[in-house]
Image (cartoon, rainbow, N blue to C red; front, side):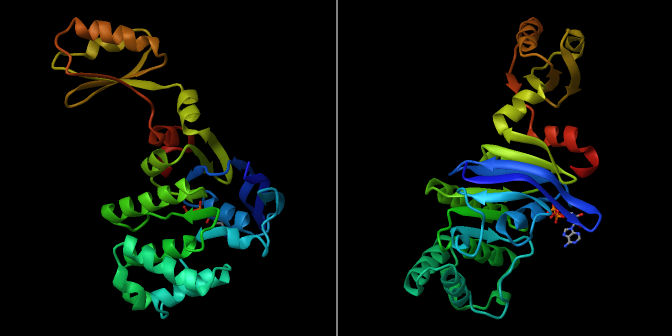
Length: 299
Ligand SMILES: Nc1ncnc2c1ncn2[C@@H]1O[C@H](COP(=O)(O)OP(=O)(O)OP(=O)(O)O)[C@@H](O)[C@H]1O
């Protein structure tokens, strides 16, 4: 595993912000961190980056602790953002990349290419404070990956962006992964994690309450749904053994089932009632899993 977080705990006085958290991420993987406000995501990231010392436990990147020597291999987009408001965008990007051992010429070339890619080629000579929040976010993402880190840690990279910019940044992050980077990001949006990641962790009060591949997490949750769209009254189908729950929808109904075999029975019975317009077995969404594991108040 490229990134290994082993039994990491962080206490602030008597308060345990991160509690015996372990995590392994393979090289080239994309790992999503979900959790309510205050669950411990940022604290975990800061420990991975070496910005905070764990009270207990260890973090290794490619077998080594993260120190000044290997820190240029890492890129970070902090939640609190960290650009100098008065400094010009290009100057700032080049300066930050040079701190991470990139040559000035390469940094300038890369900065120009990224500003073009993000459709803000003329922003290089503007001060950061002159840019809108969304455009500052683009610059912040460029700053985190300009020096081509092999590990990229992004704390809520899509917050505050309009849908067009979300798609632009998602695509850039996916392309960066395709070039071989290992990526960890946090989000409050389950759909972003579902779309981009193979693996995920849900944190609750400093602990991983759900973790692993999204496929396995969904499978082990055990609850699937069957969606049927047709005009007939479907309410009596909820009496079939193995149907847990039934919700009427505008076009038909959704049934929660405990066993995939029950879908077959529902299909057979529904076909007796008329013409089916749509029949699908649906996996649980991460949102359902999050609500079940962390609680409605946090979703
Ligand atoms: N320096 C600190 N001193 C004391 N408590 C802290 C400190 N940093 C974080 N905490 C506490 O640790 C807990 C975890 O905070 P953290 O910022 O890691 O959560 P988070 O999951 O990133 O939340 P959010 O989604 O709101 O960004 C919170 O209760 C927070 O108040």
